[in-house]
Length: 186
Ligand SMILES: CC(C)(COP(=O)(O)OP(=O)(O)OC[C@H]1O[C@@H](n2cnc3c(N)ncnc32)[C@H](O)[C@@H]1OP(=O)(O)O)[C@@H](O)C(=O)NCCC(=O)NCCS
Image (cartoon, rainbow, N blue to C red; front, side, top):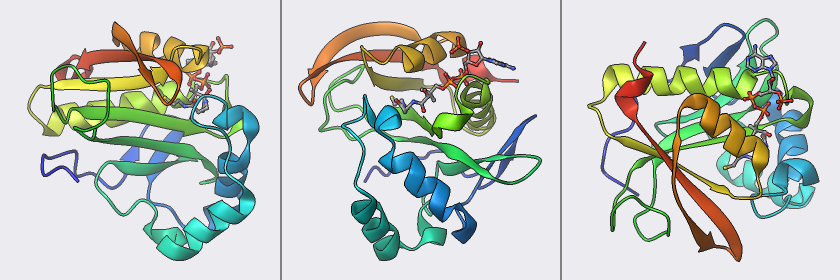
């Protein structure tokens, strides 16, 4: 794991969502998220319920976000689980970087199917990038998404990411996008 810093916040509030730690009450919705074929379509497919339950058992529901830059997205009014978002360091030995062996900050997001189409991922991503821009020096942020994942690419575009190039990974065509962290400063 990278030694480079990511953001230190453990809770970030936006208009309709709050980014917070995972908790026991999120269990069933998290299992739904990770086993949904539509959610998994461009990220290697859905997991089986047994596999997700096993992972939760090994790590512990409350520890799933126990690393800098990992959050659950919750509805601000009800605290109900909506999805997950992460701003973490990319692994240098994976393909799809701006420069060789870079460990850029990388954005990733998964929204429960019933929360798509309402701008909640956009709001959560804006909030996490803004918080990181306030804390960290300017640097590139990358996003790697399957080129067939139109919803994710539209979101990247709305956030202000620019397409850098495409590359092959996991037997699929992937798009590398990037943005300057300080372009998200409030
Ligand atoms: C990628 C993903 C997070 C995008 O979710 P999303 O809800 O489409 O994204 P946004 O939050 O940007 O919402 C945009 C939609 O909300 C609508 N919207 C409604 N109210 C809005 C508001 N107040 N602000 C912004 N958009 C709003 C937009 O018009 C847009 O609708 P459209 O998709 O019908 O054009 C979601 O599809 C997902 O979880 N996919 C599976 C996991 C995945 O592939 N992750 C990416 C891995 S790289």
